[in-house]
Length: 106
Image (cartoon, rainbow, N blue to C red):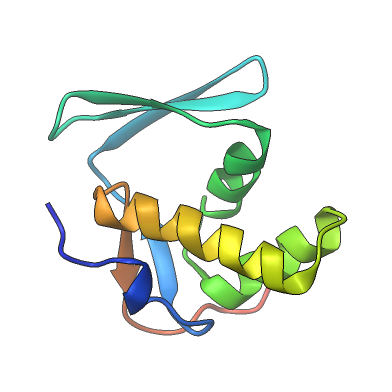
């Protein structure tokens, strides 16, 4: 279990999926199983979109920007919701903070 939480996140924080999570997509939504905890998680369409973005390590800022462009939502609301969701996944060990920077897509 990790002690990292939403308060550890800023726009430059780089996140990656935990190696301890098995995942599949069913009817367009992600379902995941924590090997370590034996717990099952289901994500809605928005959570699945964020999970797909994390197929490779990404910064919180990059995730926020993509979600802001994709959905019709106020920036402050989007940032809060994204940070809350990422913080939840971080605190339960589904995500981890990684060192380094993310290479820009080209």
